[in-house]
Image: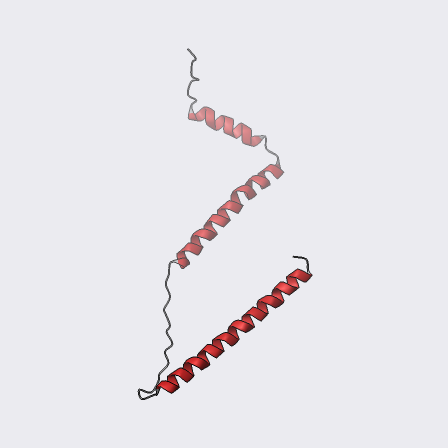
Length: 109
């Protein structure tokens, strides 16, 4: 039967740790500090970012006011004008994306 090692005392652990850390060179301390600091900064950043993510701001709703006696022709004309405006905005957005894609293609991406 194999014997288990004796448990070490906290004093022996502290002495071993102090001896091990005493053998480190200065550049190793800098690397160790960076290795601890970088993930800590990223974690803290994510933590503070999630605090704001759950806040719900006020909802703003814009409503148009129409006269109560407007005709069906006026309603249809307004819908057609709104649809035309929406299509123009979509076409402009497509042109912007096409220009971006053409630029990226010219760069070889």
